[in-house]
Length: 108
Length: 119
Image (cartoon, rainbow over all chains, first blue to last red):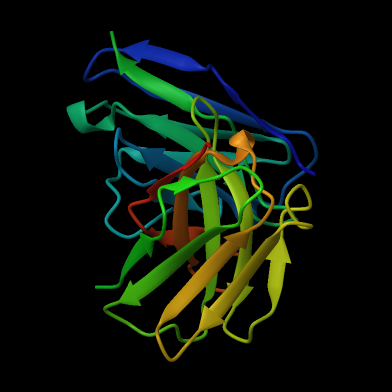
């Protein structure tokens, strides 16, 4: 099983600031099979990025995914109030599909 | 616009079977894959498994001995059965669609349903 470790656990930032979230895999993951999701309180997860760097339909261009091998990042260029949420990474190239434990982006 | 909605009991007794159904509206089951994911309190997301439009399945090995996911195309539904539940199975359960083949992200999610395992 591929274990995904997200860091930091919590990120405290102000609106307008840049957020950088990391996800490290226990073994190499193809860039074709890596995604990021956002989960706001009381809501279902929402797909942000798939294939490492492809934004899902309707996702703002301030969300950018990157990385390769075992290290992947999600960058939010300028935080909007609605971006304060929990973010999960996922690999879907190997079974079982696995998620990271999440990074909470909170208002400083 | 396609929407997914989970339904089922919110409370299940230990050792019983947890049964949930996901109803698809605004589109057909088509040639997609359909999955279940759960979020235990205070923890991260856990992939449970999926069923394909052909009925083939893949499950998380940690749950494989207890889980069954099935498809009912006539009702536009797919279901999750998890037997011999314990308190560790308490979670919000989500149904979701894979955006393409089995090697796809989940692009449409249901709103989730909380299931508590308790006597």
